[in-house]
Image 1 (spheres, helix red, strand yellow):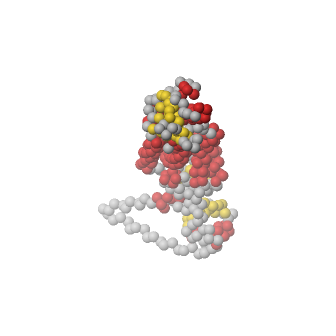
Image 2 (tube, one colour):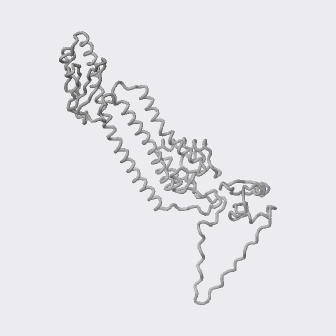
Image 3 (spheres, helix red, strand yellow):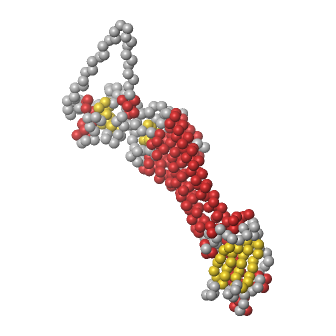
Length: 395
């Protein structure tokens, strides 16, 4: 029995089906008179309307007979045979243009930039929030820090999986990078991947990374330009018009100019993004380092304030200096001196004078003060320290 292949309304190739099956698809509206069909014996895909009679559906419309051009007269040159347009090039059932290494590489660069930009954007926000949370001093929550590190470690692969598997199993069958380069991913029958299949292909790409990118380079010399993960997942990367009702629109040779422009644009955009991230993250990191250097001085000031409280309860006055309450003379490099005194209102004050250590940044030479208030508590003040480096409870 003769077997037919056809392209449905979603531009997916279907078949083989029997003549009755194709006729039923026509009656159900899955195909129209303009849909492309093929069977053994046809040199190329043809509109279904030319075979309705063969399928017992209709009488085909007569095709207009084109008159041959008149022969050239003496002295005239023979007219050149017009080259067929790419959009109407004859295409058989096996006429599939596989995406070459350059097109795939350019698409990979675009996709990597997109995923990395999203990842580092989230990472930067999380880093800034962590720095702000630690600005007030105190011991960091180790369990929260471990959970944060694990979360960020899993963030990139989860983003990558959602992006690649989600888009390659979508109606476009392609990531944004592949769309720009005019290519898509199909299964071994030329059809759209399901999400599970696309996720499996993404997991298989780990083999290409583990082989030091040799698995990706295989797309440059395998028979159908498959990378290692394509061979494992039984997938192909083809031109966007492959397996559609217009296979003649496939681009057989990649445009060198297009690939060069894409790669050049990617590099410029990558430099731009890196510059922005550096401009934001470097100052934020410096502020974080500066605030972290104030954690220990603040802790020592609080411990000293507890001793001052005990001394005041026993003597009903403020101590004159740290030595009076038995505080050691030694201090970390960031602290120049501790001072204890009573202000004009009779309130005890614990002052931490910061040294000129380079690690303190703009906070070098500043001071932190804890002042006893009227309710038995302590208020914090800062002097000579930029606001962005001042602990949160001193602002």
